[in-house]
Amino acid sequence: FKFSGKKSLCVPLGRAMGKFFPKPEADYIVPVPLHINSTRTYNQAAELAKSIADIWGVNVLEAARWSRDMSRRVGLSGRERMQLKPEDFTIMKDVRGLRVVIVDDVCTTGATLSCLAGALECAGASVVCAYSLAMVSV
Image 1 (tube, rainbow, N blue to C red):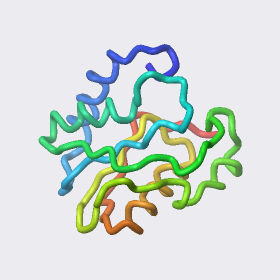
Image 2 (cartoon, rainbow, N blue to C red):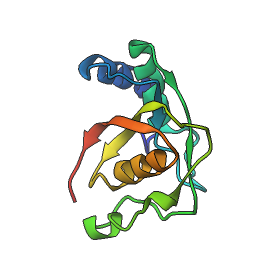
Image 3 (cartoon, rainbow, N blue to C red):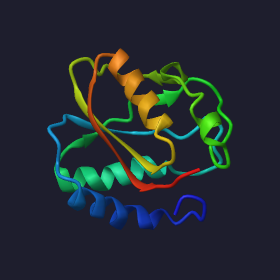
């Protein structure tokens, strides 16, 4: 659904995630943002988050953006992926005191999830967990 433009798959996959993962004590779901200059017409993580939110009754907060243009993560080695830092994200919303869940479509090394969690925590949020639809290894 990510590269083939099959956005409609986000709804059933997100609903399945919402049913599979137990609802955590959280105020918001924060999706991983699209990369700057992405050619995709939708953010698959945000679409998954919306369907999870429907099941859990928790709102989605698109609080983050990439702070710089990043190369595509596809095809990078584990070492290259681990070069991310929390500073690679900018938190655009006031998240102080909020308990948040991070959602992404794919987790490869965990670097993106970890760095976004660090950025949210630096901005005052408490990250209670992070979920991805799939996990792959490099």
